[in-house]
Each structure stands twice: as structure tokens, then as C-alpha cells.
Image 1 (cartoon, helix red, strand yellow):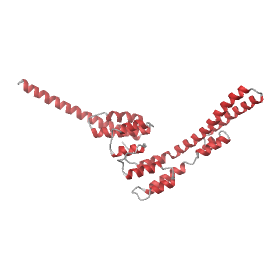
Image 2 (cartoon, rainbow, N blue to C red):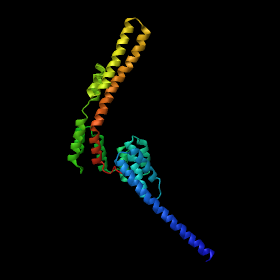
Image 3 (cartoon, one colour):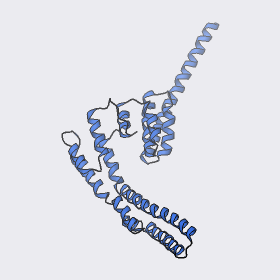
Amino acid sequence: MSARSNFALALIFIFFQTLCAHAENCERDNELFHLATSLYDEKQFLISSIHFSEISASSCDLKLASRARFAFALCMIELGERESALNALDTTETKRALLLKGYLGVISTDISPSDKIRLFLWDHRFESEIFKNALKDNQLPVHDLERIQAKIIETRNKNPALAGVMSAVLPGAGQAYTGAWQSAALALIINGLFTAATLDFANKNMYGATAASSVVLSITYVGNILNAVNSAKQVNNVKSGPSEVELKNTLFPEFKP
């Protein structure tokens, strides 16, 4: 056999080896994508994001890599990493990528009017009348959306401003209003102790100690008010969380790996 024939056979052998390796890598990427999707559904967002990131860097299947970048962005949103999500979406110019960027507050001129309506409804999910008016004259499931939105309003029944005012009148009262009894007791005791100490120092003409105690008292007093406001917001978020997830899934069925 001539050297030329040997060289041709070697090239053919290398070509088929490359094809086999490519097929194996593609199969592995598909299996990994299914695993990452299962982890995502189980709310294992950090682990699934690692797998999606690995697939997105693969050149085996460009369509799968694009899906993986979108899924990675979804994981980053769940983990509170907005900028990382946007960076991933910048290289994924699909329709649902533009919609997800709009969900993150970056509205593209290419987004459709129907998508803008969905984003508007999501942004105004806490405002009943605006939400209901925006539902008119569109093809969305009105009954389901109104039901979910009403549930969100119903569960967000702690007024942060009221909690703050209550704790301003009596430290700990706002926390008690939200059901945070330990925080309420702690706020009442700490503010009570520093108030008593400040008055005692003032009665004894200990001006330096009075000033120092007053500064600490002002910090604990303001902190008590802010804590009450945050406590009300947290209670609202926890109670309305499941309904908000349902609303997001209804408005944006595209938001899945």
C-alpha cells in the first residue's frame, strides 16, 4: 500500500474518531441538561446553574447552548444575581430572552405589545384597580389572573407604614403587629433600658454619659422603627410568595429551562 493511501486512511480514521467524540459530547450535554433541569425544578438553583453554565460554553449543539444560557439566567434570578442574569441574556437574543430582560427591567424596542402588557401586569400586581384595568381587551386568562392577583392583595395584609408608626409610639409594637414577638420584646427591653439609663444620667447631672446614652438610644429607637417596617415587608413577601410564583408562571410560561 502506498504512502498516499496510508495517509488517506489515517485522515478517514481521524475523521470518524472526531465524529464519535462529537456525538458522545452531544449526548453528554443533553443528559447534563436534563439533570440540570431536574435540579432547577427541585429549587437547587446553585447546582443547576453550574451545569447550565458548563453546557452554555459547549460548541456541540449551539441551540442547546443557547437554551442553557437562558436557563442559567433563570437560576441567577432565583439566586438574586440580576447582573449575572443580564450578562447571560446579552448573548441570547431570542424572543423569550428579550422578555426575561424586560422582566428584569431592561425593555427592548423589539418587544411585542402583548409582552409589554404582561410585563405591565407583573409590575402592578400589588395595585388591584390598575391590574384589572390592564386586563381588559387582551387574550390573557382573565379569570385566573384576577383570582391570583386578589390572593396576593389578600395575603399582603401587613402595612409597613403602620408597623413603623406603632414602633415609633411604643418600641416593639410594630414587631408585635407583624407577629415577630421575640423582636418586639427585644426592642421594648433595649429601648426601655437605654431610656431609663439616659434619664438616670441626666438626673445625676452626668452630661457626658447622658449625651453618649442619648446617641445610643436614638440609634436603637430608629433601628426599632426600621426593623418593624422590614418585618411587615418580610411577612407580606412570605405570605404572598406562592401566589406571586403562580402569577409569574401564568403570565410568563416561557420562563423555564
